[in-house]
Length: 169
Image 1: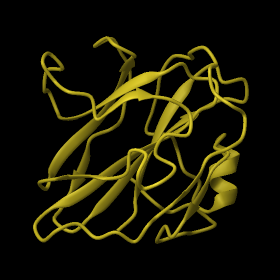
Image 2 (image 1 turned 90 degrees about the vertical axis):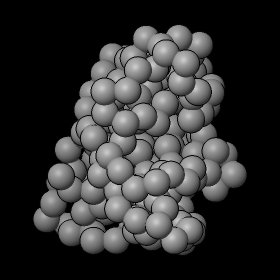
Image 3 (image 1 turned 45 degrees about the vertical axis):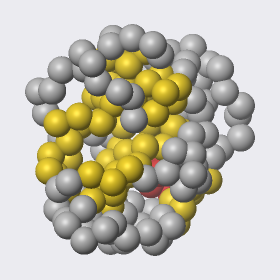
Image 4 (image 1 turned 135 degrees about the vertical axis):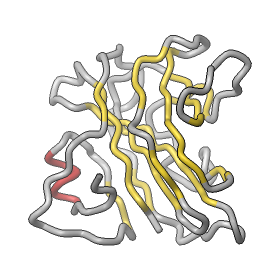
């Protein structure tokens, strides 16, 4: 899977009105493909695109950092769960609740969460429910790595959502 082999032009081409600063491994010949797509949801956010940057933050020794960015202006508020593959959402606490347009565009909103190395899924649910509307591919992160998941609209009308995984470090 390609994580960060994309330029701003690639991101714009897949419907992201988002600028990623500091991604490694850009290659103009590589076209990114959304990791997953889901159903379209109602618009509740502003139209101005979020701007997000790799803050250069480094995880503690033996840890990983994970972040999620909401770049889909027509999506209704969602909750985001960061889980291991096959984990139940019953009793789980959302990583971000509610997850609305623009969240994740600064290190404090919500910023990065620190976890042990492993294989994770970002699971997006309708706000206040465990009704999964979109799930990322599994992402394996080793100690010292930083990963960002970006929620985006996978068509120009905002009728479908996708999630793109990007390795920041």
